[in-house]
Length: 180
Image (tube, rainbow, N blue to C red; front, side, top):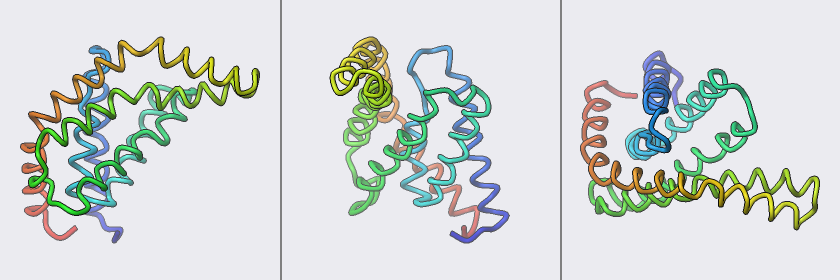
């Protein structure tokens, strides 16, 4: 990626949109638009999305503090980026059925808590060996399964209805924005 004022501005603006939407929707447990936008950003902007995610994660850390949750944020959003890259690898995003995007986003939301349980596994592993790690991870995951279900269902619905229009708008805007 060429480092230019346009790219820096684009990365800053799109990272800010992720952060603002996350903040605005924080009162509704596990309903968010970040997953949708990372899918869309990845399909339109490709590798630039990595910078957007990095800035977003840092903003979250600065705003909410660098707690244990931050460790999960260091890998979870990049995992979604990889999922989107795999989906867009051989087909144009609009050629892919909307249900596929909805299923990918829904599965990501459903697995969000399980991904964070990995951190609990390592914390439990340090104090109680394999058994402690598994118990800790399982306890963490089960305690949040209701929220994971909400997260998965809301991600599914959001992506089902908003992926295509969001993709079309961002794709059009970046073409009008000029060579990036």
